[in-house]
Image (cartoon, rainbow, N blue to C red):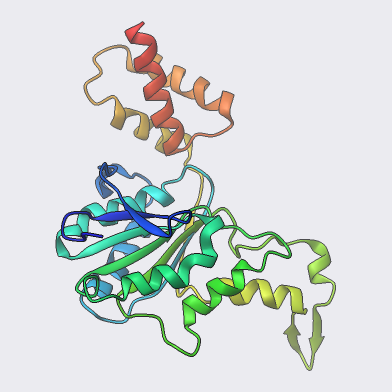
Length: 257
């Protein structure tokens, strides 16, 4: 893998190799609206990482379409010239992370700093892959390399499903709350991420600002455009940044026809 030439790669399990990404999403932090606090925190964490200072693994959790994955892409675009690189690992390939870590700890990779990116991370009951992930976050007999951080996105705050049955074993002992084993297992995984960033659905005002960002050169009836954008969002039961982009693409396609 030529890390001087390529800024990102995707793990391909069938060939047990890293596939270079030749067409990066050019999204920038300035295009991501309504998440200024989240941007500030993860950018600062990443700058510390690039300087060789203590930095945390990050869990970006919350509603779909709110910019979690785009924020990771924006980080890469902002700091690639400073030595940041990114490797995306599919959720189903988590068991391969030790082999990926070995590749990123090789002589030709140590001069770079890597974000190991796991998108849409969520485990079901009985899925043992989360145990391998815990060992990567804190190490086992061998500590993880200093040039690798894990950034993961999820729709679940604690990555594992939470149900009422899991809380039945929770007890008060000497005035202290003691969770049952199932809840403790759930919390122990998320606790290994030192940085938690929460993402919430945009309100209508922010959604329309996102729409306007896509239609910067639009010289038609802006009120009618906003009405159409709202109708588009209501049909999808979502008024997120992703929805605004989809509306723009749909509008442009209809205008072209």
